[in-house]
Image (cartoon, rainbow over all chains, first blue to last red; front, side):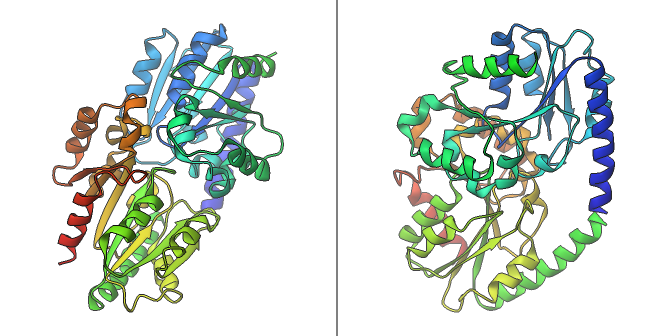
Length: 208
Length: 208
């Protein structure tokens, strides 16, 4: 039954993907642990990218993130999964009925905070991005290889607090490379805006 | 089918619970986001509690945590779920075949780092403890009410980095109390050992 659910999801994800491609929208699935900084990254990216953006916010409960994004005057819709530990392609399809994407060039989809389940469910995205934060520890790529291996880019956030915690950037990089040879790793602080330039450049490159 | 799986788990969890009660073992299910400090809390508790402890370490992959605990010379076994996003009662039952619990008064079970799925699977524990860290943000109780409502205690970790981040303790407490009226919240730093006394006292109380 789990396999059937995954297959049904793959099929609907393919439909979403086709829709995004037809409309020339770059859909980006943003995944992370709770509190790693997915919303902060989206907010900074809205400021820095200078392209029309729409956002889907996924959470088990609450509408805080959609409210924050809405303050930036971009189209946004909140999905509350009500307990489910990940978004799925059907949720994305339904949410598009309520989201104005006609003018968007980029669609950021913020997944539920979870380093496990979201990796198993395609949404129709063009790329998958993982936000990791230095406060989570440098061993995470070794512990969550499924997530770290499936993404096309890693954003290592909260670099501003590096002096106050125990985190070895070289060990983290070693862990990423053990499961993912290609994904660029952007070292940033969404709080201070440090390091956002390379991330923005990468987004522009995948959108051109 | 999901309901059947949950029912089968409940039944096996009840068997585990009976076994622990017969042997006078306090089993504690420790849950948290990835990197909140579950292992660090267990290591500090081994140092401070002064009672015989055994540990079950749950991770999707790797044996780092079991190795760290093993250095403290307590019985420990590692469960690798191989992809599953939570421990279940059957995994605990199987792991007990490899773990010497004859002398243990407390059994700490470190769950997979995940604020969603572990809350739905009883393991046979006497109490559930959530480790939250200030670096995850003060909105987490509002976003993960299922997890915050199910626990008998919350350990708020990484208080040593509070001056360097945006985290409102009062807002966090408000969120906890919105879904959980009774659980004590212990503000600690496992890095500096700050605040561990009250947590240790609470453990002694539930064990007496």
